[in-house]
Image 1 (cartoon, rainbow, N blue to C red):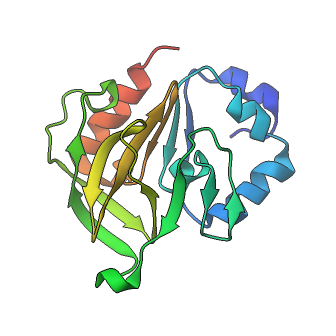
Image 2 (image 1 turned 180 degrees about the vertical axis):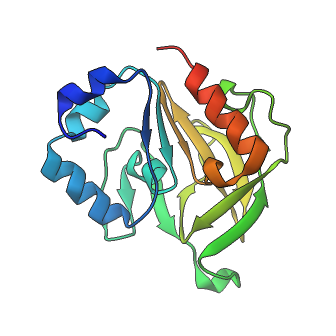
Length: 170
């Protein structure tokens, strides 16, 4: 667990977990004084679900300004799309060629639990999913990666993704 900036030095890779409310999580990060330290990390960083959303510029959840590491928006699914919110369950993803997904077949299913999504962006998007509309299932900018799904609940494909992340070099 990281409580102060020096704690980052103990780890080769950083995972920002994903449970909770993006606005509240960002408030905690600000209170801890770790926001700038996270922005300056050069080692591999993986945000999972809300952890991915924290990497973006802004979230409609709590109308919160986030880290802005990846300049995209986190938005609430629109009920007008005729979909059940939250999105819970398995969904196929369309994968771009990226080391995070090495050995994972295109259209593999991952497990999602979310009401908010990252707008699709062809520059930072490394995988997409469709739930009423196409959105970014995974994003990357430099050493920062984010996945909207939960790899820890996604069986062998999720395990492979986490192994790939652990093998990324600084």
